[in-house]
Image (cartoon, rainbow, N blue to C red; front, side):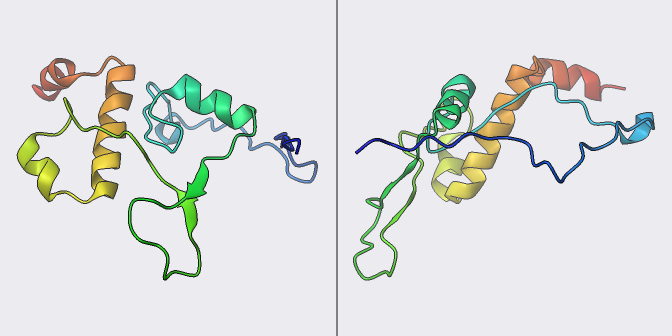
Length: 123
């Protein structure tokens, strides 16, 4: 079977949003971080999206045999090492771990590590 590739394209009925002119309402993206079914590398994630690859597979993190759906997007090979200490790692929900790690990676990507943020807070 040949895999069908899905191409993303803009909707012809939706106009692009107008540029915000009020500087207090502008948002600037300075760094990116993510945790996904394709891993935590931004370039790999983006390339797999463009290729139309699916991150959906059979659920194997727990017994799903009694559930009506047995497939989903599972995050694999995830590590909090270097981002969350061991004590908190044991007590935090997976969702919170994903948020904390991806947020810290976004700060690193923006070159806003701990030392920079610590100096900014000293106002």
